Length: 179
Image (tube, rainbow, N blue to C red; front, side, top):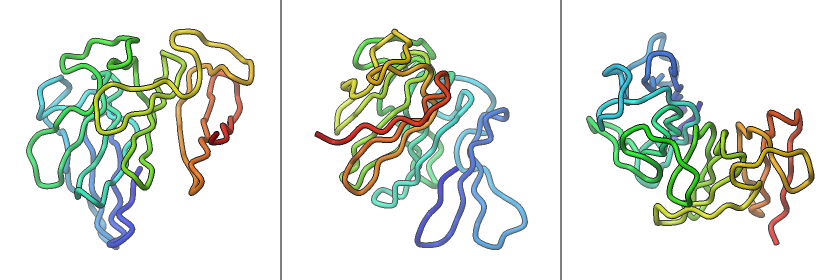
């Protein structure tokens, strides 16, 4: 779920229906604003969208497209997405440009993207390029030590850019201090 802080509009991932819904402030029903064209990998489709973030600087939604194994940007009013990171055809991977079931994401005040890459057991950090950097966890290795993750599902950053990870497989929230 994401919220436009200026209007109060809510955006909710309707994962099972492969779409994102928009609910205007005080509205009793919603509208499809992303996807809604069935499950798939075409640029007008989503594949089980999970985490979303409303980016007010571009009036767009940044979407963790879970079964598409990618992160996409869907500008409100547009009929398709543009790729930020990952696959365009639903293929999972573990290289710095690929993802394996991205679940949650957030953006910091500079527009950098942090992705909970669930089945790669890592947090990927993307600047203005599709080549990511692993900033928490170890790619492809689940673990329970202080530096490892096990199926991370959510990610957040605070104003000092400390990283918080919902480390689902370890039943904990991990804090990684900015160094």
